[in-house]
Length: 119
Image 1: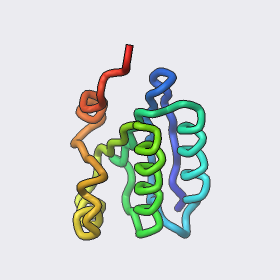
Image 2: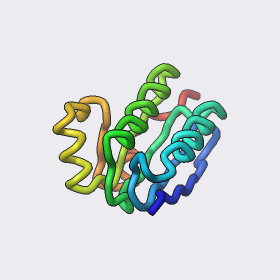
Image 3: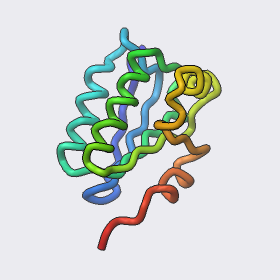
Image 4: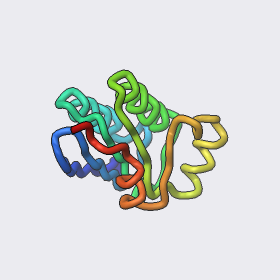
C-alpha cells in the first residue's frame, strides 16, 4: 500500500499535508518527498504533517521527516507533526529525533503551536 497525500494550503506560507497509509521505502516515498519539497519551494515556511491516518513509518520515512525539518529550518520555518500513533512515536523517541520533530495530539493543537505570521 502506498501513502496517499492530501495538501491543504491555508495561506501562502502555511500548509497541512495529510498522509494516509504507511510512509516507507517500498511505498511511493519519492512522490511524498517531492510534493513536500515543492510546497517549501513555493514559499511554505509553516508546515504541519498530519499522520493520524499514517499506519507505519520506517527509517526511510523518518529520513523524509528529518529532511523536511532541515529544509524548513534552513528557511527559518516551522514544522510540526500531529496524530502520531504509538508505533511512530516509539521510532521517533528510540532514534532520539524527538527534540527535532515536535508532535501534537491533533491538527488544531499543531496549528495553534505555529508562530504567528510576521505582519
